[in-house]
Image (tube, rainbow, N blue to C red):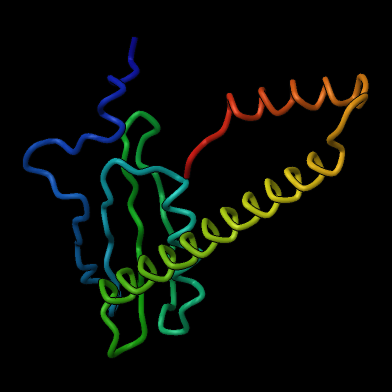
Length: 149
């Protein structure tokens, strides 16, 4: 089968760097970055984040081959701003946005669990009937699939 081994999805080969930059001599303030062991998910998020920056004139990416786990992202900036600086800033901003999203998600999970606990304690008592049995089964199922972020 042509598919590469699974570990090749995330293990960077010896002698290769995670990010390599090649300056584009044909276009002013432009460079192409090769990012190893990543795919469209990160590439598209980085491209979108770069395009939010007013210092960036162009940002686009391509995946050279579907069985190779890397992508190329080309960045052109205004004079006075290095493409590497713009990529670094976009990466930092993207990490901040993802952390904020994770924190909001965690807070919503806590809020939901608190609401469910309050709802269950209000329904407590003798003779709760069939619905209470269903609820306890759902809680058991929920506990079994609980994921700690």
